[in-house]
Amino acid sequence: MILSLAFSFLFLFLGAAFWWILDAKQRKLLPPGPRGLPIVGSLLNLGSLPHRTFHELSKKYGPIMSLRMGSVPSIVVSSPEAAQLFLKTHDSAFAARPQMEAVAHMSYGNNGISFTNGTYWRHVRKFVVQELLAPAKVNSFRGMRRDEVGLVVEEIKKAAVAGEVVNVSDKVGGLIENMTFRFLLGRSKDDRFDLKGIMTEAFTLAGQFNLADFVPSLKPLDLQGLTRKYKETGKKLDAMLELIIEEHEQNLNTGTRTNNRDIVDEMISLSKNDSSVNHQELAKLIDRSSIKSIMIDIITAAIDTSFTLIEWILTELMRHPRAMKKCQEELTCVVGLDRLVEETDLPKLEYLYMVIKEGMRLHPIVPLLGPHEAKEDIVVNGYHIPQKSRIIVNAWAIGRDSKVWGNNALEFIPERFSESKIDLRGRDFELLPFGSGRRGCPGMQLGLLSVQLVLAQLLHCFDWELPHGKSAEDMDMTEQFGLTIPRIEHLLLVPKLRI
Image (cartoon, rainbow, N blue to C red):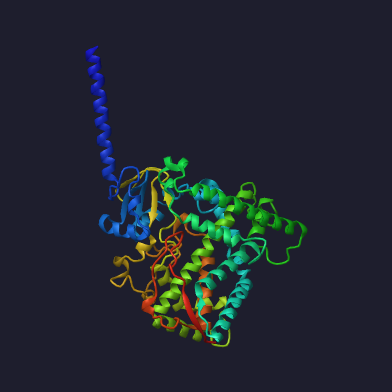
């Protein structure tokens, strides 16, 4: 009996020792990183601008860094070479998305493009890319974009004649919203629907840090009150989207739709197995919730991102008048001074494209790319990456890497792209404003077109000055962290007629 107990204790001791050694070995194989605190890990150390915190930590721990965010093991990637490993070499292993509470309550969970996983996601993404955002569909709304930009140009012309200060942030934000809603819904504004207001509320909530996403055991407590707010906003958003879809269904049934079919029309036709839609196999997958979720994905991806980028680029041009002058000289040479810029002019504006690439390098649309999740245990570059690890690619840090961009990496110099083949479409990992791989942004082409057109028109039609008493050195470059990182202050400028 005593001998049996002794053997049992010896077996347990050896088993515990083996587990401890194995666990220690696995911890050793993880990428280097800060240890963090019990329960919360490194969450309390992220600060108000996590992309900057991660950047500083990567200088100490390297371009592939591990840290614990609550109970979630996280891997932060901060170099082009590391990004290529996770987004290309091992793309399939990291193509999953983590489940976020804000998405579950305000974007119909696993029904859209951005945070959906599995086979459904691949089918829906294919439909969105080949049908909803296909070049032919985007080009069919060229007249709409011309009209909307023209309206804003006329408003700014009146302000220029009156010598007024213009809130460029508001003007550009409203323009991008109107173009997005007309493309998606067939209307820019309708007093019956305050979709813009509710989406702004949802943007704000989604951009807030939610402790429950990283410490799931705290979800039932709702310590920050975010779950309640997610649910309330989700209900209001659902009611409004339902009204919009019902109206589109009625117009399609009665044949009152006379202009181009918008994106909602296309999705409704698909859900009803309309023969005019090519992807018939998707009809059984696209239901009411899917339509609403894709609507939210498109609005989220189009409005805040394009507006924020245009605002940052105009700010940099005001701080670098030489670059502003070169842009305007190119516009004069390509377009002339007797007409507005057309979309057919955009491919010829090579310096403007360099300015946009440099703006995206210093001020990426999303500083931390949409999080990926490891579908399985995997070894990357000799490091053990556990299943369910969250992969965070710091595009902001990659764009400021002096090993890639030189000692002047923090300076705004569009000419650095004159001899460079680095592009922004996800094939070159030095510049990843739209992500890369299977989870790259499907609306990249539409977003880039909107940014090019609006910037070209504003720079071609007007010279811009800072309000009286302000200088370029006074411009506040402070960032506000959220889904994107806009300037904390609105951009206020005085327009002068140029053409």
